[in-house]
Amino acid sequence: MRRILMITATLAATLTLGARSYVPKDAEADATQAALVKIAGEGLIESHAFQYLTQLSDEVGARVTGSPQSQKAVEWSLTKMRAIGLENVHAENFQLWRGWTRGTAQASLTEPLQRRLTADAMGWTGSTPPGGAEAEVIAVNVFNLDEEMKAPARFSGKILLMITKGEPKKDGAAMFSQFGDFVKLAAKSGAIAIFGGQGGFKSEGMHLTHTGILGFEAEFAIPVLSLTAEDQGQLERFLAAGKKVRARLNVQNSFSDGPVQTANAVGEIRGRERPEEILVVGAHLDSWDLSEGATDNGMGSASVLGAAEAIVRSGQRPRRTIRFVLFNGEEQGLLGSFAYIKQHQSEMANHLGDLVLDEGQGPVNELQLGGRDDLVASFQPFAAAISNLRSVKVNDKVEFGTDTGPFIMAGLPGINMNQDSPEYKFTHHSAADALEAVKPDVLAQDATLMAMAAFWIADRAERFAKPWPAKKTATMLREHHQFELLKAFGLWPFGDLGAEDKENPASRDQN
Image 1: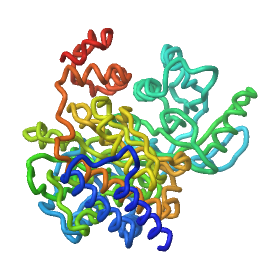
Image 2: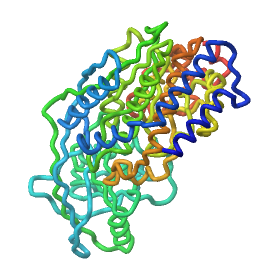
Image 3: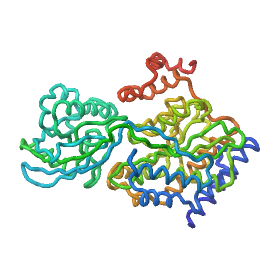
Image 4: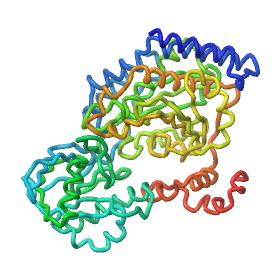
């Protein structure tokens, strides 16, 4: 507590006495500055963010989209939003194309020796025949799938072990998108299963597997399994030595017969002057199911609730509305944030953007403005104002892999609160994604920074951002090398827009 009090006092001094580059221009800016000090105090002293995360982890637990636990998480979130004092609290329903439930995943090595293997199924992947199957294991090079896919007949009746040999011929995003096509071809060609979670790459950490999806809104007929790095390494050594390798698998997952309903949880702080103008502050509520989902993305969900509470308790009301949204279905392809854009299409012109935290358990170190280079300079004063609390960079980087993506596609700044999370590679989608991986003081600070950034954007005298037209957005996404990835996953909506401007960036500003 003493450390938090010292931080709060330092922050107050920074805001009132001034980082040199932050000089309020008028009484309105002074009022915003004073409000930020109050919000900082409420956010850092007696923060309930870690309490929220503990409840989400222990009372709700894993929250796979479309599951009963997912619905329980939505109801829990709405209850917390009402208790905090948010307005217009409600669920916004949407459909998931198909539900999926994890069953058993048993694996064992039968040649050249016998022992148990540790494996877990990737999400929305299929099953072996009832009772399991035994087959020879052969290697497939994920770095050269173009060649591997030219001779799919050799996959028939085999278990495929994804390896990395030589140098990659494509970047990571392109390999990930191609991996889904490879899995479909392998299933069509009669493969029994695939050892190759995480898009065909090895697990991180000691004796950990990592689950996850293999495409945007995608499912696969055969089992795709994540092995521990230790098991993967031994199988690779056996094959490299020319030994015959066989394994037995029994994987039983299940799909729903059709679409299932899920929902985003929504609550607001209504703006005092321009309530029709809206900033979305969000994180994804859904998680994977090998553990509690504390770092992905309970950390973000608790930050959203903690940020909302800090603003409400401060007694400050921004000029514009701050809408807090806990999205569902992010892990299956940003489904909740895409649903939000669709459901609120009539008011998107009045949106300022969205602010999202979804980068693990570390402290915020960067505010990425989703390609909006026109906003970087105007955001710098905020970063300067909080510099004694945290050094935060501001840039126009694009992060499309979380719920910023659909807002960026709509021409708005999808602001990603990037985090310094070196241990996230171990907890990401693994059995280590538990409450013990999160530090309460880091969570409180991240939630407070989210509250302050949200209030600063929503309370500005001048509107922070307006949507870009489609052509300008398309050009920007091409310049930020997002076109190939979005096209590969069937998410590119702009046709040929921006192609000419990419060759002549100077013409972009004329659009």
